[in-house]
Image (cartoon, rainbow, N blue to C red; front, side):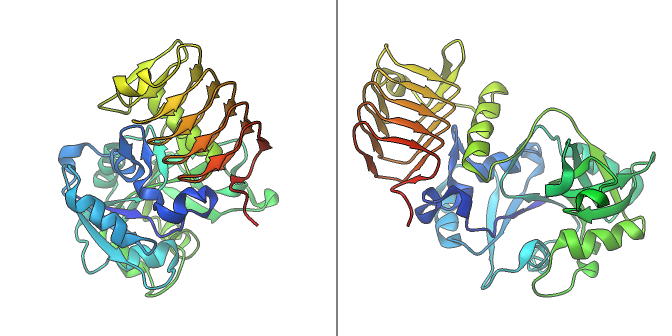
Length: 338
């Protein structure tokens, strides 16, 4: 089966990390975000991954040209931003039959074979994974009847327009007939396609439970790391501690001073951590944390250095950046953006 991954965004909410590394290539434990996204389907069902995107796609292609992954990767580039619908529609000449489509920053417990089973049973044009939330106004909401047919779809409703707490979870199974409902050029699949398909009874939905994380913000990124730790979404490295963190190797653990406290965090190879507290944070390869520092919900880029006595909360630290001793900062980036 082919899998289309919608990866057209520049990852602006994860800057400055994404200024040099495209979001699909950022690591969540021992795999890239893109590999986690695709893992909603069993490996033996995925023949080809089609990456629909425009930002640093050459870098994505170069990575997967040499990566040891069990599927082929094809890039369908955008010359200009096309929106979710335009990006998928741009793939109409390379995708055929029944295929999966995933938003490029979703980590969830969804088993997408349940969508495929529903699709085959009902003969729908598309089947959506659905997640229940308390406040659905930031998402696309669906009306779902007792036969799992989606009867209504509304993207980002105003509070008075809410008719459901079931939201579109950004994971789909489509027939290639879906392209007949899509105009050429820039458009939104959520605003321009799904409402029409729902009105004709051609969309199905499958609610799921477990976890659902849109890993597009620093806070959500660290939640995705924690979920990946909790649910053992890795094949190398190991967990350490009563509130476990993931270490890429024994060497990564040995770079951590025994007096440190590392909780629910990711520690890549080549990192060193002094007698400090690191909580719900992600340390990419070669990062260094000095003594007596406190990091909470931080993203520490490749080769970055955090000085002694720093107190950082929800800060995104650029690759190779140096945070001076005793720096105190809540939110934002380092270096701070003008």
